Length: 372
Ligand code: ASP
Image (cartoon, rainbow, N blue to C red; front, side, top):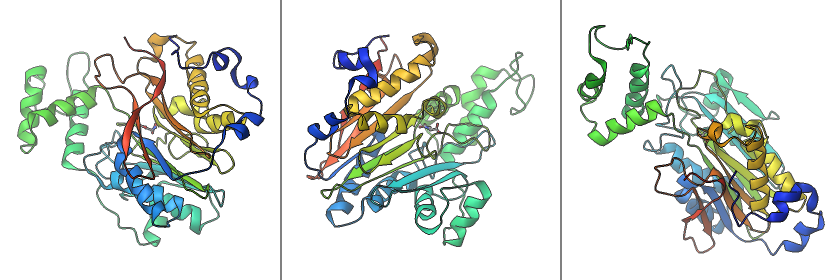
């Protein structure tokens, strides 16, 4: 396992027990306006800071931020245009936590509503429940005036159909093609082009890529204001081609999202199942409560993920997992299991940040393992 030089030796050797409770108090400065998000959250962070600066609540700020991505048909990991489940149906998960009131809300496997984070916020504010799923969540959303819509775009439908058609038996046969005698490989792209005349070569290549390697996505956003108030949200279309009804880590309070107003918040993107095996977001916040910095706290959580694979890097190749952390004094980090998504990827694992100046930007995440 390749540990990075900037990982504290002390953290690596002693783990959580080495950090006494007082450290967090000593290290903290005055709170400030800041929003942290996953790499697709540059616009979300800018929006969150805009809302905070105009006097808005931190929860309204992060929800308004992620709504941009939820409504963007080109973000295929979230909301409208998100990649669907194996039946070709988009099912969305979201959660939120409001620091000052210490309340949370979540929805799982919600169909037909473009902005699940807003529905999660209503679960938080209008019910004494914590989570609604499936049909009940949809009915609840409709009671509050949300419109049920088809969330599949032309692009996500093409990607799903490509995935469906590429699943073959060992003779190369699929029911989703015109004839058993059809030569599979050369036909694939040509037929797609016929079915989706508006798609260019780049989009067709993308569809083949996501069909072969279901991507991870999701947006998490955490914000702090000058009064020290914090809130956070995570929203996603989940794992592409999942079994209908599968719920990942994003709507699981304590898994894909956790925030304690006294300490800070954390959220995740990536392979939800691996995060749930370590209750990632809660683990990170508890680590900070016991004195770890955001980086140390997140790397400790990632080490627990690696431990579940007996630190076998080969077995972890297909696992993508990222954390975003904001402490209540404004200290923050992004932390990823791998330094980049694949061996051929040219960009480093990164996350979004925006402070009071409104200049939202990407920063590199710390990481546990290095793809060479
Ligand atoms: N964490 C999400 C899930 O497992 C997916 C993702 O981030 O891509 O549902």
